[in-house]
Image (cartoon, rainbow over all chains, first blue to last red; front, top):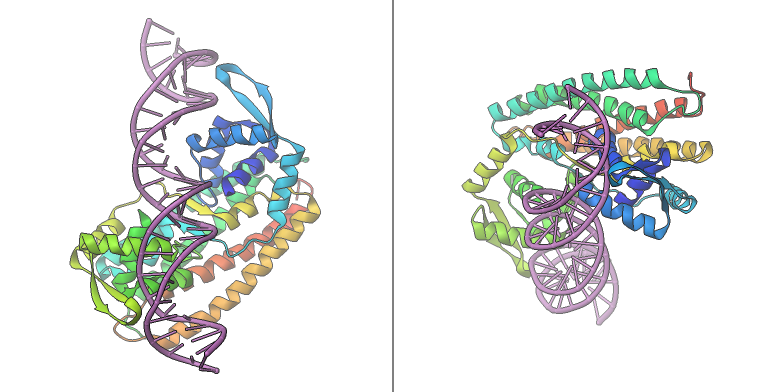
Length: 178
Length: 178
DNA sequence: ACCCGCATGTAAGCCGTTACATGATTTC
DNA sequence: GAAATCATGTAACGGCTTACATGCGGGT
């Protein structure tokens, strides 16, 4: 059911079309929080509009429909956010790969951890650029957008991944006492 | 297809039954990497055994079957680990909630971030205990288990979440110039 | 005029969740 | 002897992926 709230949440920031939502998933949510393709987004939008939790705010060229969050949708989103979640479940293929490293021999292992480290370093650097850009855009009305929250989260998460890779590299080859 | 490799990977560390695998998912993989229920695990094991990438190593009481990784399974796992992945996709409901915070009003937002911070702090403390326990168990043959890798990853990730929450708390109420 | 990107949609099949189902062994 | 835990399984349903499908509008 998270797709529903991801869509409501994105529309809470500003009205958007399905096409734009697909891009927002890719750019801001994909790497850390949630992902959906257009083939899932369009039917979901139609369903939400039928229910009345979102409305068609504008119709444009090429059949484009811009959706806005209705009051009922905002209330539902708030309720979902405030109810304390049960044990949350994560599915993250990259992390799974990292955890399965001990099944490889020393050379393969080292290769993969070094790759993970380099990746974290590169993506971390990319995110710094994005953050500078976002901080340049800030306006008084909207101090923090979810994009900025996501970026900061990403920055810290990549930093953690780098530290983890360093720790793993140092430990992995060593004998038990390490 | 990740379930397949998660199972192969767990069996690479040591032979286990479906029941044990379900527990391993819960204890080590669930929070960061992958999750599966027994209703998914048992059919997968039967499929993998039919294919021959795992074998039944032992049959015990109550119909218990202990599976071991076959050579072909180990080769397949290695191949999967070494091929560089495409853009990986993450689905993490907790993080999604955090990213949607800006849609709430100030009071609700603060409440949720404080909750996230407290949670990271508590789970971080729990993981420190687990790490001490794991480090006490270390044997010379197997310097690092995937459980230890997961624990260290968790430790750093919780630390990052705490830092993120502190940053968000400091920024969120402030006017744009922050 | 052509191409690229915008824009939305559908359908088959696979993956994952929830619920139902059963029974053996150990522990108190 | 009862309860908890071990142990495996199936089926219906819903969510997600992949592939197919179509057409408009803006830029060069």
